[in-house]
View 1 (tube, helix red, strand yellow):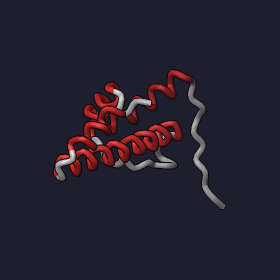
View 2 (spheres, rainbow, N blue to C red):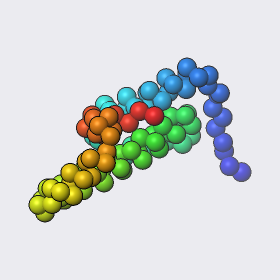
View 3 (cartoon, rainbow, N blue to C red):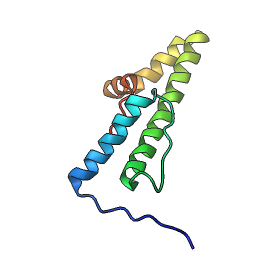
Length: 102
């Protein structure tokens, strides 16, 4: 028999606070691009959902930074500029800050 932990239902404001906690935890204890582990059965499902979202963004940021470094190291600034021009400025600013708000 599988043990299931029941978590209470959150209202809109509580869910927002739990998501904010996950973002704060990431920004205080992880560097942009680093994966934060989920904790099913320990963290509320809303927190785990936010962590999964943050991890998706962290993976994308890591790929982006890898491509930028590669293009700079191989002397392909035209490809890098084309890539950056496709990005929205607000996304680049968020990426630079490690801000992965949902």
